[in-house]
Length: 290
Image (cartoon, rainbow, N blue to C red; front, side):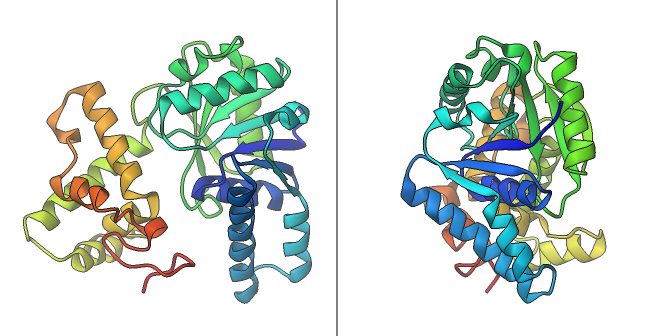
């Protein structure tokens, strides 16, 4: 399949990262948000990300302009009918995602692949809201999108071989990342393992074994992690980590997936990590540690 134009639904952290990465690869992107205000904010955040790269001499002003010119701001799903693939990246809410897929099913021709960036939800359940469940697949990018060269390609019960093969080719050849095939299971591989790692770090913190800073330094420096587990949680969003753990706890019924008390307290207090400016650590408006 010839991929030229990709729709991205949701302009949050992951939607911004995916849109920027696709545009940098030479693809036309249609970025969708509910309102003009949120759409403009997402676009501004992509521009800010590119400005940071310019400061580090990673890209030129001309390259920044070219990348931004490939991203079209869209508020109506009907405009996505011209896309070759649509990637959904909204919040981890099954009903909200099913509503999106139901709408996409009505506006996108049957050959268009409908992908979800979900990290924990069932692709089979998402696909059940469509007329053509065989074209629904999971494409789980990992934060930060531009730097992590891995994508989990998740097959639902009815995902066709053709959909998988086309998606695998898209990931391997066009996006130039390593695509690994995952059969549907709560949390897939990466979220299931990393959430347990993060949850255990929170238990260690809660028990007073070490400070947040020292826990992160121990794992980052001792085991070559790019980020420590607590800073990682801040990047993902503590609300997202909590939602993932709660879903896996419900699905598997095993105590190891039960979220730590400190995680619940922080989410209730609105300390969600980088996106709220404070989690286990504090962040400025650009998302840098302070």
